[in-house]
Length: 368
Image (cartoon, rainbow, N blue to C red; front, side, top):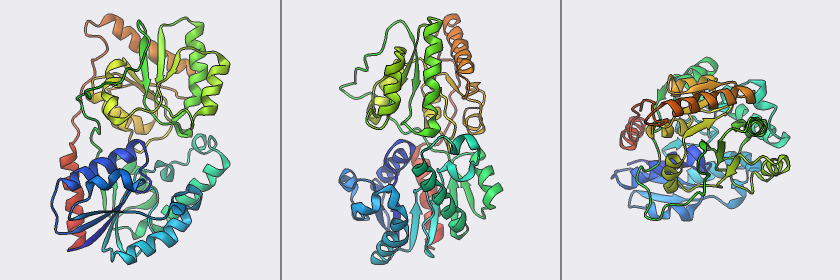
């Protein structure tokens, strides 16, 4: 029997939370001779998954503050692993844990392998400092990791080019939402008679939300029946939403954060998925959009081409007019299609049972 630490402390939202939630759900439905200690962003939210082989653990709140992450990695983690006699770490965090204990590192922090200027000049000084420090720690410790897991061939190529990883696995992340809607579906109060472009992302600098304002101005100037639907937290994106109000653009609608069980309803209510993002390690909304047969218009960048292939229309994410042309192209398809916009192919991705099996197989190899 081995003691295994699952580090999901940073999996607070988006793709990271989707991965942690599905992994721990699969773990709770399985049996194991090993003991799994799971570190989560919110202990109370995950205690329902405790089993004979699963314990939800925590660290003091101080260590969860982003500015003090160095204390987390150099003080809290060593103390926690020593107290639990950990034999193996499965690390879903941004940064490699500095330890001599065997470690599986699930890499989904694309900042480490993208040096493009447009990514690093868009963030605040604080974010820049924190992220550059994280890149330094990954650079320093990634060679000590037993196995690195990434989600795409594009990311694998970038990792190999920069780090020459010895044991690198590519495991795509499955769709993380249920296709059945809840008994009480949410009414998103969306506009009727318009083509609805869904931008399903949390507010962050690399998501490129600022391009939406000149895009909205173009839409209004040309009097096009388009509406861009956002899912951002009003508190986090207060400054951006204030800019929208100042510009008096009425073709952007924010429905706020959406619980996972309500996402199927939102995808079905909208016509097209719009993603002008500048950086992704995978891009789960791409897979979700394809699963629902929704057309995708997105950035003409390597990560998008890797996941979407021919199932997307690409635009220059720095140019509002380029984005509008893509919107018009997909709207033209809607007008000429009897079945509307649902014409894209549905790629086959592994389900969570298959991905969980691959994760556990690698754990077994390393603990032996």
